[in-house]
Image 1 (tube, rainbow, N blue to C red):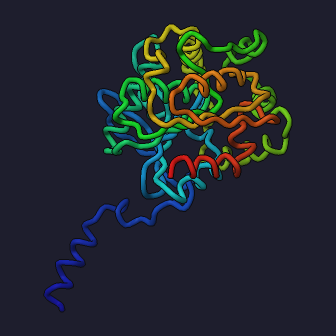
Image 2: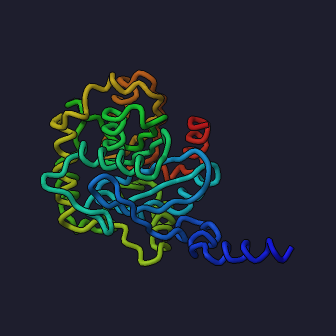
Length: 295
């Protein structure tokens, strides 16, 4: 026994601290790690085990804008990877101009770098545009898509009202205004959302102003049909779950209905009393639908 115990103990002690640490119990406990993805560096967090789900954040957000309760519930059944888009914190910036197609290619590079085999992909808002572009450019790298409160890039998008565009184009949009767009009928859901995102250590849920401006241009080009990776929708033949809120003023519900009609293998759910944050306002029901779809 002594002859075996010595080498085994030495091997145990030689392991890096990260290998000995217990897995995080919540996404807020998961450290931000970095990986070289192609020629870029990407900062990400990971939690859970099983089939991977890559979650792509939307306009102006960092990975800290995912409510922990939402991420943790998904991670109970699978491995969840959240990350910062280009130019945010530890994710390196590229050359201007920023495009949805380029952010999708960086997401594909992250999937490759982490050796994720055909993950499922969820995209919220602008993240849903990136998810569509990813599946269009790299169809073999994605198993299923979940598109939340997003819009098509085929030139048929319904734009937000002029006052909403003016509000969102300014990096300093107030928290009150943003929450009114996310949860127009449910202030309690907005309060819960804020409590969740400020629970991250050193929380930074908003992208820096220069990135916000670059994302605004990228999303605008996509909505106008100017990004070639946004068309045609008929090429997206993988299973897709589309969700939205009837009261969404950021990306009106007509966009989700268009996706639901035009994508060959789409399922759709619209919540009549919700806005851009429907997936958090109706978290229990939406997670049930997602788990069924991704099973």
